Length: 595
Image (cartoon, rainbow, N blue to C red; front, top):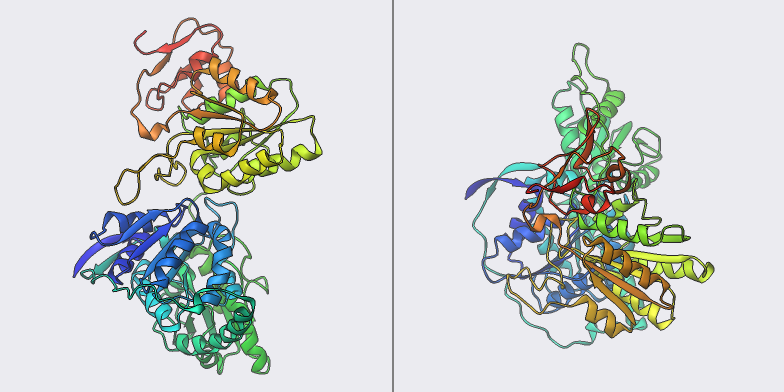
């Protein structure tokens, strides 16, 4: 045994290694990313780990491994589960042989997502069980139980940590990793081929399985009832940890139900919990999943107890829960004893909108296209990545953003209705490999007059600089053939393709001008590495030629440039020497530190 301070995602990863996981796949997405990275970093040498090109592919690779009897783990964030839902829904009918855990990390808030969706609904929709850890310590044990349950019932199992569990830290006792799970190998069987007649029979079996799972869950350590009284609190996930902490300081008789496996709901335990209760408050992120299950039990129990939660307005319907929010809810439910002082509420932090980093090549790319399209009617469709920040002033170059890969296809829909408008779609290199390629093929096949701007910064920047097919690096620390975006576009049939460094503004503007006037699908690949991949050099400074026209501030919005005491200044600790500002300056007042 060793004692370590671990982040929740690290605890989950080490728990999976302890469980003998054989194959790990995924696509980076906050708050899930560190799970796969930690497994790769602690790989004893016999676990296969990969960043797949998207979540659908990751799900299918993990499923193939589970068909052999291997234990597989697939990781993603909640939005990625939308991409993976196609194979997932069929997998619940086909089933697996080895333990397969689908880790979908939810992002209440949300902090870094375009949706605030609850994975527990996917579990219910697909008739698959779900584990909902309340702390890093529990997550370490729970991921091991998830593999065991998956093999016991022959189905994939969801594992749903939320942001606060993923990124909080705890001191854990970590035991020596076990041996790899032994896979029997793939055995040919008609069960692996899905047909409508099989699906009907399997659906009936799946529905019957839910009662069995509910009984199993009622006896698991992750679900339990403590305390006594006429009032009760039911909680799951991080809300349970907050509730337990609040209740430890309140002198009141409260019955507490911990739900670690919200679907299928542990009915036997839930029935035991509501006996003798007059009221129950439910604390859960995000949607009223447990609340609805308790309402069903209460209805079967003559309408008692009264269930309070999101549906009754006692808890918010959206957003992340905090200790302070839970304390206020419990105080209103049971009352805080007289004399207890509430902790001082800290002042709200000032709101600081996210911006593109100083020196980010995306800023130069946006500015080049903006300059090229000046005085032309154009719509700029964006995508998911750092470059979504191009929507902010002063660039204002992202008019739409839906989901990964959609910028290219949204532009095609817009063009069909407004053919006289220029339609320019921005997409990053990692996102291009994720789901951009089918959109390119569609544009070529239907000869749609759009221009695609690929922002190639040689990494998956937004989620922590993970490799992708264009980098030639893998999570197994091997070097593979780089997938060249230019040649891929050419193979898809794009006739007008230009690759250029966006930090050479004259060439970048000219490339954009030529692309947008081309009749049919065209593409510009702006190639310049993310600033995290190199060290700053040639730091820029302002000289006496500055006329205070503020064009460098007004047009590019670099956070390294500001006005101080009536003068334009460049903060040397932020500048990376990209030289965009010096190319924008009309008086030559900006130059390298050497000159």
